[in-house]
Length: 568
Image (tube, rainbow, N blue to C red; front, top):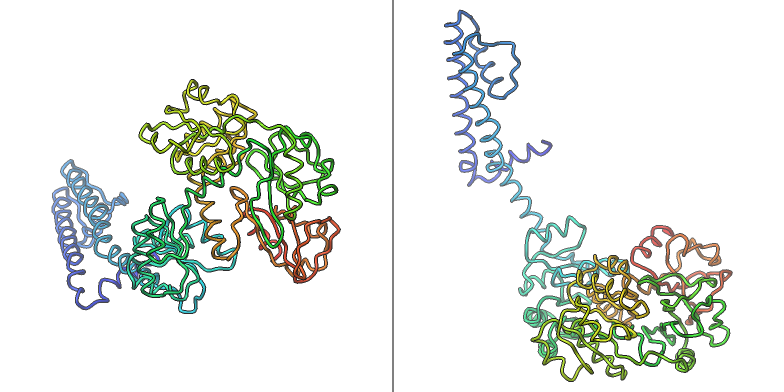
């Protein structure tokens, strides 16, 4: 009711449409007036027949109260004829005032106002502010888009999502997602979005549409960086020839990163990222002398100079407290120089490892990419695939494969589930991956279970099912694009965990790590301090934080946001 005035104003604000908009409403008012006057006259006729006498306005008053269903009861008929007449008046009022009037109001007043308001909103969403520079344009609202906008915001990089559907564009704006309304294949859309001033354009639609996007953006700018997502391997060359700066076969790379987490063959520390002259690596402690010891008892810092900065267990990254015990399913994350990581590999290589094939369930693009990556490490692979039509594509990739349903116990037994060192679940069905995670964990509790998630919302369910490591397509895509925007090497720590370079807030300058209580208050794990051109990773709780230094932290986007709010 607060906007009734603006609703009514829309009926008369455009001279060419005044009569057309007002005429149905005026006709309704005329019919309503005639009906009220007719019922008022009949009221007097019946009241006179009953021997009652009322003023002329009383008839109008009675007709309005009955038609509006108020029914005060101060004026009533005493005969059946009067009661029948009252019933007719009541039903007429229900029809005209409770059904026709709201419908007419919506059609004549509210709908035009809403349409005009939406047109006005869409006009405002058709362009990026002229002051915007070095922003990122995301060409489709896919699983990557919303997470990427959030991470770019934390990194201080503005981003806009291009959306051709008006309703979707307005919903994104209501959700506080910066959006540009326009067709993703129209040059004018990218001109209004300031593509020539952007730091990157992400073409994340289908392969055929992406090639069109790349050519369209290249018409406006020959220098802007364009990252194009390639679903099919055959599209990589086409997108490069179209003018894409970076082509991202995300499903293929997702399979490779999942394969890096496999525990099989000769144990070694897998490098998961580099920054400056340091490496981040992880290794399983299963069947090594480190199993069952605390981090302090392991003595890796004293003997190798390498530091444990976090521990994966049950799919979650836990802080590396000195008294934390490393169980059979723990996978510590370490940081050190290349020589220190190599020394750790030399320590691990002397221990026996399970020589049986890794079991990959799902022979799609992700599964086949994982199999190729494992083959390069000379790790035997057995693939289980339900679709017989994919059998020719598995030839030469896996050492062996089975065609059948992985939910069938006999299929898994034949594939070697009882002896495999690791199970890699790569199907695109999250519900199936959750089921198989539970099933495989029950059949072989010792195997390391690595699971792909298609949708980020299912990650927690997969973790609860017992997966040792989870990585979703959307999260991996966000981290890949973010590394390109920030011009750094890709560091894939795991689902929901990222590496943040955080400038030290003024409120923490001069305090020790113990006094700052960063982990306690925000959940972020400080793994290093960058100052004077170097990085210190051998941190004690008494280390004092110098002004203008940069904290290198591990944690989630939510924890990074909590840090910003806590140390505002």
